[in-house]
Length: 228
Ligand code: ADP
Ligand code: MG
View 1 (cartoon, helix red, strand yellow):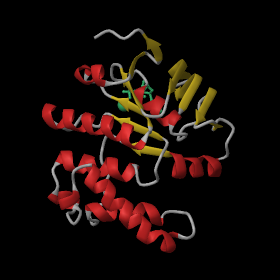
View 2: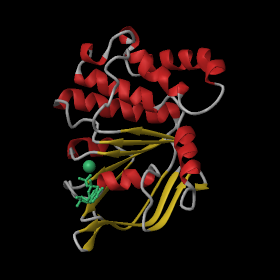
View 3: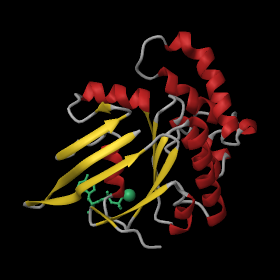
View 4: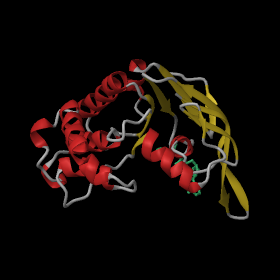
């Protein structure tokens, strides 16, 4: 599970500080999707960046699977991300020269020693995930040979290569039409159940929210009552 407790985050802004998150608390259990909505600039991406331990808040605590990430060093939080957190950004950021399957395999080569020994298991896991996102037949294609929706599926599969307990997804449908967007949301809901992740899913598209286990709205960096 992931628990954010009383998170406040500010950024430098001219002479003063801009408050991006103001006392935000949020808990999500494994096997559930929490939808996070709110207008542009309300702090959604900032909240995901804090949850991902990519940005350290001014105050408040981040607990990932019972581990307190708040006081961790950069090295410790990098290890936490590598083993426990899957991150899907708005843009797929796939490497143009790699095939879909290679985008996943490369995750095994980052950082840790023993990557060579783990290659067979990583290859099997990559094939499993490509099948799970509906791309079993497309593993040999490079990004330019895939549609926007297919690239987003590769992006999601890649984030799941390390068997994360927490999955953080930022506006995955923003570049897609309604139908492909809805399919991506369905996919995230299904994978969350199958892989038992605690998933935070940012979307500005309110039509998807009723499908989620829980929903919150950010307004000016604060949690507000959700209306839709
Ligand atoms: P959202 O994802 O809901 O559109 P963001 O979390 O990106 O909102 O931004 C929240 C507020 O924080 C905005 O006012 C934005 O301009 C500001 N902000 C976000 N990132 C930075 C940054 N790195 N430096 C300064 N201000 C930032
Ligand atoms: Mg954003």
